[in-house]
Image (cartoon, rainbow, N blue to C red; front, side, top):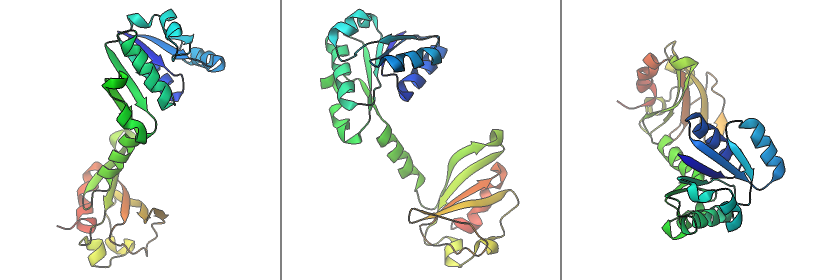
Length: 223
């Protein structure tokens, strides 16, 4: 597919690189000449052009009418809306994807502005945080060491054994394959020293082998 991306910031460059590696015909548009030169060095397989993507004539000159997909990926929501509208209304691009930088502007990114799909990074991060704070369950955060270790989080409920029994970290006697590496309490990081006492609502971050994850239940999750 022929894909046009507006905005050669870190987001635009990352998208362009990924799509080029997938063998798409990618054109990256950027207004700032110094940024264009940097992008050309980073993206040898991408056509990087100096262009004001908010101007109809500029878009006409770069062949926007032939695009299958346009991605408005600048760091400015107003620009992304204008680019989306021009892409759909002036050039009839089949699919327009727009980046939302400020979640308060998300309601604007709809078909009336030519947007087929919008991606809100702030909203996405918020939703991921909401998933992570689920109380009383083990949530995977990261896979480490080629899958040999995992970083997980448990948010302690009021009936978690570590809370109700007043156990310290030393009292938990965790298996060799699991270690508490951090505790977050009221948005403040706490040092996991042996005498640490757990409270309801603590976010306990554990590094563990996959086969040791089940051992967390006896300490941090009520049966």
